[in-house]
Length: 423
Image (cartoon, rainbow, N blue to C red; front, top):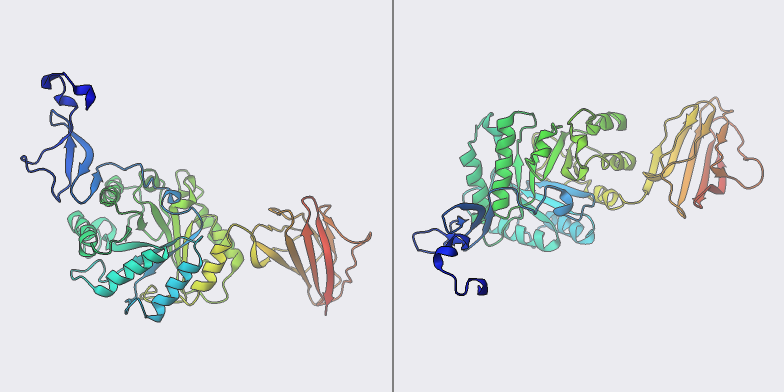
């Protein structure tokens, strides 16, 4: 405070910060920091926490400020953790988290449609071991669509649940909050309410805040930052990849496509094995976090998905083409997006020309399976982006014949390394 040396109090008091509390000092209640004239700032201070009445610099709402930014898993773990140190279901999830450090896990816990009123030692232990393994743990809070649906929860009740997570499990604090039943329309009062909930959480150092309308949302819910990550799909899977892309692309003015996919997530139930690698990799173009389960309604989140290992394997390989086969759409010209999987399959129901694949990576290996129909006699013409040994491509056109061709990409051409045919 050397700059105040020799100066009169009357000339300096306005620049001194204080916490007004009847001269009792700082206690456990968050109190606004004021200047010497009593003008309150947005910053609050207590003996236990630091708060901010507006959106703080961190977290910024971009999931890259919350996790690594990689594609990840968002898991509603609504099953009871029977002794997390020995329970096989808990052990299975913890093992996946530990083995996949590059895959961020957001795990939501839900003791009693919220934190409940009684501390539970198993939940306290579950929070600790999940966080130690590397997951971010979220506490479930019901918001009943801005209080418009039964049980018509008020703002005070929602905030009380947020505080309950913060205090009931003070020995094992959750990282963030999972706001279920969020609205997704443009009603200004609803948007303001969820922005307030998110700021309320951030002021208590709870982040990320995940909001779950379970459906596509208008852009105002992102630009106002009603949460850090929004679940834009909760339901069964789509009929096909094209239908999913139509819904997830959100291509309308001020739709969610105007905002980063790091802000979005999807929950899919009623799925079955094997998972479609191509479909999931396409979905991860539009959302950053996913969870896929074979469990079904009424509560598809009360067990750990038998598909989780397969899902994590696909997500972990999101940054490069994964193992699997993409089924190509046959046409006069057949296109191949090699950025999704290393293999492709096309059913030959007529003659076709194979366009040069897109999203190729130099030095990577690829393969193509071309299956002729019962008519047979189909021809496949390859673009100039392919190179084959010799001057002609030795494919014998025969009904029901399967052709398997492997390639390595040299940065310019798809160089065929083997050609096999099977009847």
